[in-house]
Amino acid sequence: MPVRRWRTRRSPRRSRVELGDFGRRLPSLGRDEVSVYDALVRQFLRPRLATFAGRGLVLGVDAAGWTDVLPATVDVKILSPTGRLGRELASAPDVDWIVLDRCLQRLPEMALALEEVVARLKPGAALITLFTGIARAEPDERRPLWSVAPYAARRLHEERGEIEPVEVEQYGNVTLALAWIYRLPANDLTERELAAVDPAYPVLVAVNAWRRGGRV
Image (tube, rainbow, N blue to C red):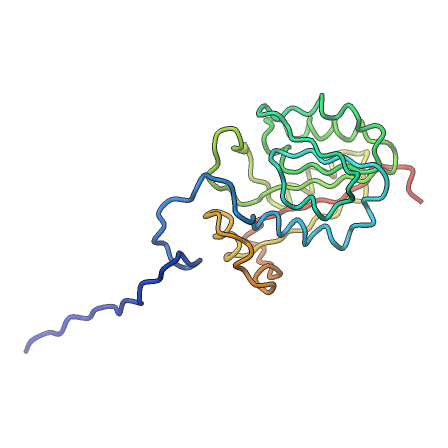
């Protein structure tokens, strides 16, 4: 009796790479058209815009696309390829808040770098630290040393005795993780996809804390 071979049914070819289509073998190393990371940072910051009253400072490793949600008076500084913070922190004692955008992840001693930042903040100043918890291919000058899980971000900040309270949030899911790794544009995603959170896929890990003293 002849045996009939079973064959899978192929789906029609599509003209573009979808999130579930692994026809693209390698992620691009170019700039994101509309970064998923930037979209998630905006989502995190919008309910906290009151934090950004007064003079502030953003230290980042790249020209972030999320800074349009901040006041026009904010001072944004891009770190050099070495990622050192000393020179860029010269104005930190006079600011009311500071945002560290992925810069700690490029340093071999994150705890020491965070101590330096906290020591320069005035009492009551807000500190927001942003990490990526999902690694992706990057050119050498933008390549991080670490991916940071939410519990590690909390411990890193809570071990600095000068800051409290420490609030940690994470954003991401498998769809956003794929979009982040393959540099697919965020504007192709729905609000529901951007809002869904799966603890296994922390594309963005965000910490909100304050330097002890000075807050009423």
